Length: 363
Image (cartoon, rainbow, N blue to C red):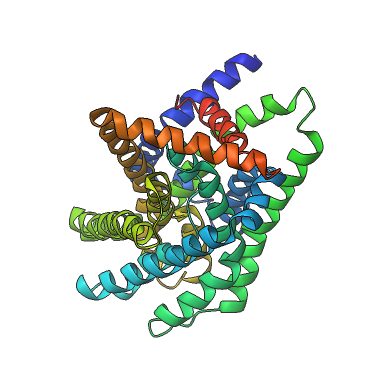
């Protein structure tokens, strides 16, 4: 029974994007099915997703913040400057209506996405740097996301910065902290790897339910305004995400990063925690129901585009084997240097992420 559940978890994680899109299409034709995904229920569901993230984090992941403060600082600055700035620019270039503008601004102001660590591993990026950036952006999100929304979206609608701060603490920091505590306490128990193996399925199911709730909320608007509304919103999400990857890469180049770090920062900047954006849009912009639409589209598209970009990086490696070899040697040298300074080698973090990728059926 357990093996069957683990196999199902890996299969579901591997086909997460197709499953989420399928739930979205199903909800479009049967919207009452997910009418219950509102308010507190939606918040609890996202909390479960963040709990699954915490279950994969160890104390070594947080030590990275102290070992590589400059790299993490540059990455965090890129995260919270590029994506909000691009979102604000697109709002004016596309002349978005207030609701859609709030949605894409919220996606831009949220921290990095959870799956970027796996994508960084798959494309031979700097995995330790990726984990450090994810931790840092999540930790500062309760402050940065409300402040940025107040600055960029305060003219559109009143932003409850204090309420948003509290909500992000409840829905991200506390579940991640609980997950880390459980990992620290029970990681050596025999049942814990099995529990971790089931978490990808839990995460995908929760994300699909959130997206289903969003489609249920905006169903009437989608029907009344037709396919053009979806295409227009998708075009904005596509530009936002793609420019995030591109400008993230150039930020790494400006900082003098090597190829592995540039790949990582491009993925970290471009992939946002759109699930958090969806919950915040539902909780704080209920008067503008269409605000959740860019968030829901981003949930699915960021996973698709991240996989595509990681594949393009790998294809470049295949066409340039000497450069790919040098990239691997640089990672080995970094691990050796860490060992000589009594630091946890990057390969230790990489092994954790590889295990996550294995459990999700990606490799």
